[in-house]
Structures are given as C-alpha cells and as structure tokens.
Length: 143
Image (tube, rainbow, N blue to C red; front, side):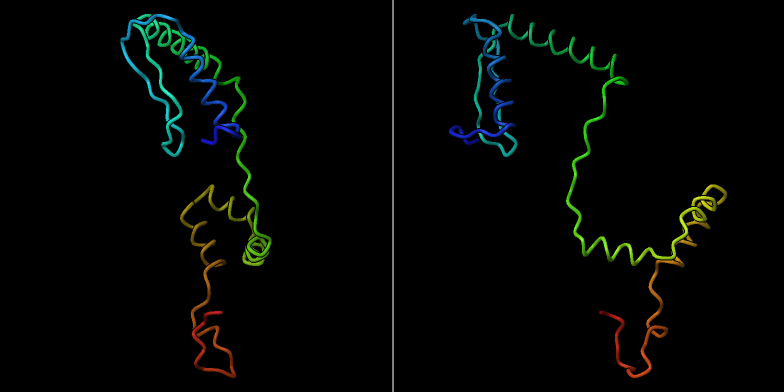
C-alpha cells in the first residue's frame, strides 16, 4: 500500500479499519484483528473488547440479512471490460463466417449432440491432406 498516494482500494481498507477502531474506547482486549491488503501487505491492526466483538458481529449479521432480503433488487455488479485485440477479433470473425447460429440453436433445442457435431464440422480445420497446395507437397498445414 502506498501511504503517500493510496489508491481507491487502499482507501476502502483504511476506512474499514477506522470503523473497527471506532467501535469503542474499551481497553479490555478480547481479540485482535489484523488487516492485510490484496497482496498480503500489512494495512493495520486493532484490539477488540468483548463488546466490540459482539457489536461488530451483530452489525455484520444485520447487514448480511438485509442484503440477502433485497438481493433480487440489488443490481448486479458491472462486468469488468477487457479491451479486445482488433487482430484477434478479426480472426474470430473470419473463423466464424458461414456459421448459422439460428440453425445451430434450433438443432441444439432438439439434440445438443447434433448441434455440437454440426459446429465442429464448420469450425474444425480440414485434414492436412485436403489443404496441401498443388505446388507444394511438404507444407505441414501451419501458417
């Protein structure tokens, strides 16, 4: 963790630790908690009194129960986007030319195995003996 310029995740970890430290000023120690960052770096620690442990457990249980009760109304987390390599995308598009997805989906509804076989027939490369060029007999089929 960069303490001079913390990132967003570092700030969340620090805020979480502050909330734990602010549970009470009780000096009776029933347990200790140590917070580590995603790569195992030490963020901080806190001593917890018996009342701190009870309160933290109760608050987390209430939050988890509320979350579970409203889970179907909570929007899903955004799917992380990964930039697509244009060359890979072009290769995939070329590879899938001639693929009739409607036909494959209809076929899959009736017999999934036949749909897989039909897909394989379209997408599997031809045997090497079928792709040898006429002017060369030693080509191994690799580009």
